[in-house]
Image (cartoon, rainbow, N blue to C red):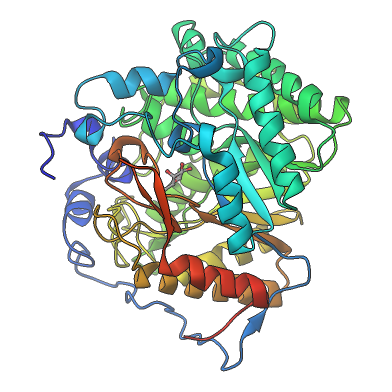
Length: 500
Ligand code: FCB
């Protein structure tokens, strides 16, 4: 279906990253041209699936007993029912209602209507053989204005959901914040304000009281980087701001919120485990000698989040005016961290959740360039071996902590409804192989969640990017498992991934 002209703010989100502040023409070309065509002259990494030459063994690669196979969604992307049972507005309701922000003028209504259809979706999960389901709680269902007592109807909904999952033998992974901040908190300053971290801890405590008896995994914040950068620097996501200093504040305050919620979790003696979800992007220098640009991209994309959470300190090369950095004022950023903050941010976790979609190349200046084929999401450079490299890097550079991959997936090739998705089968197979390879090399990897269980509302792409294992007809809400769902189900049943 033809789409109305799309405002700049609705360009694919990592295109914003590539075009943002620091980057130049090469990245712009890379983001807009077919796979590989934007790579500059000079030394490049060949865009083969496994640049190292690694080949999967002829026999199926087995996963350890108890390896968790899951699928993930988030509240605003699947629930719909945006005014039901006292839910207040979130920043995404406000943002999507603005002309030109989301393709086709789409909003989170009806999404996949999971608020009403969760029982049916749990049956689909059972058919798949899923061991775990990752969903997020909509903060404005729990506190419609972001503060004050809990809205019982909102809490009851999630109680019913976790109980139904429990009855089906599926472990919940409960994300507390997947970008749908109550609009009232945005009006009071949002993540630019330190107070939002405190509000988040109070909201988290309501849920630990209500659901803390459930044997679940909890994720405090989903991808603080995407929310800070795309939502506050590039304006491509809610709340649609374009201010690098506000983005930097959103980084620190989300991480502080994470740490405060982690402490509240311990104080409540809640069952289960808690972690944070970081989307990480292996950044490969296209110049083997001058790697300074890639180091800065690595700093802003990865270490700005890993170091404070796992090491209790911020890197000194992530923020500044050089290409590849978040172009905020480093002194102003440093001043945000009050004494004691980094101890809170680095409160011990039970696991590190990582979300992996692909890689980037970086030139010596610090421009991101294409080194691998892109999917229908132009920001996604697909290279399964990047997952292995990332896992090994975590093993080598950070204290040992159980790791769970909480998002990993690829969109359909077009926006048309389809159940025939061989590219997703191939994507999953090659990424599972790299996960198994990393486990064999000593990475404490405990589980793998596919993004996503269902086709859903893909943020600024609206309903035009379909990421589900299960197809959703958004007119009828009919669900149909895709070919990849059958593949995944076989992997789960065997607890092993076979060669192609
Ligand atoms: C991740 C988000 C998730 C979804 C996938 C495609 O960055 O966490 O909500 O949009 O990308």
